[in-house]
Length: 74
Image (cartoon, rainbow, N blue to C red):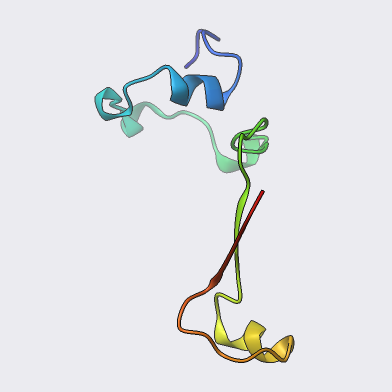
């Protein structure tokens, strides 16, 4: 992805056969401190969130325990 062929990660994912990607991690020559982390997909079609996904949070918000986490999407 060094050639800026894709405008963003979303367009890369939409236009790439992900099963054919081969990343050679031995050639990585930068550290985590040198990376500027941005939203993974800056223009998502859908946002999915998982709520009440661990017991401590369920207790904090005084909700009843559920078998499944709550799925929220827009």
